[in-house]
Length: 380
Image 1 (cartoon, rainbow, N blue to C red):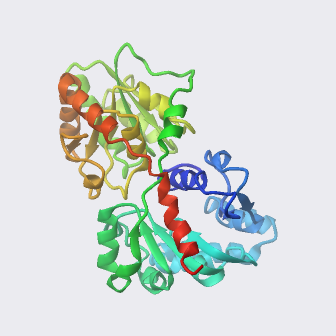
Image 2: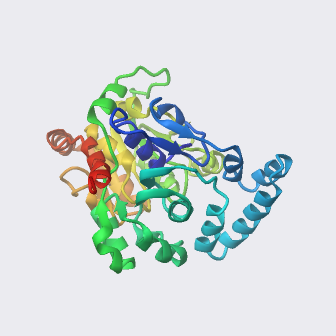
């Protein structure tokens, strides 16, 4: 639960489950991170020290496992780590063998992240119904296919987050077409709007134009594209600050890049924020320069805050946006990202159109949870 869209999505789901109606256990393999505190107290947390050590940071965890007496687990983790280099499916299967087995039978068991958790769900968990989630475009993330093709058919239902992701899964698993369905990332309008009003000490600089990007500092999320676009904005005379909220484990690298591009004063790496909404609300424009997404929960939440958005043309972008209707969609090039930002800053009419469209079409999708209830009740 450290950071990222899947962790945030799971937190949102756990917060809408009716715990008066259902007894809910939640087993998080590595129970740490900023979203742990967001899990409702009514949810029963299942934990296991050995499993937590096993799934802590590799390869640092090898010594910790040995020191704690889990020598077999250390050997398994080393073997799995080696296999992951050549066959992620087999490596993931090896990881699933060492997860703590819960001695309990459930009406419904849900694997929320796929891969080794799917293999664990199928082989180790006792439940009347089993559901797996896949949060990405499988065509762009088929690294585990060698094992997924054996395990996906064993799940009762397969959920994913957008129509593009559904089509991709059906292409890889045509025999499972009837099982594959849509389950959107849950975003509560009431919760997000309330959290966006919280006061923050490190407010954005309103003396200049402010841009904000939510996501890990990584190539996959387009951080380099953003920094190079920032150089173009500076060259064109724009006075601005560009704020980045998300895991900044690669901050040193991107700080160097910002210095090389001459935009160190314009770039602000803020790190992880449990509540990013006040910052999104304050910003003039949200920029999402990602190279790849399943369906971004950060973008869904920005839409609820009616924020003008510039977003790159990744494979699933049209599941969330219509170009020049509710966002400016650009190519994955610094020049085009910069051009769309400048256009949006200069064109008040276009900005207002986006904002108005997002406001009129604001949607709370907390009712997605009913899809899990329906599976539980299908045999009753």
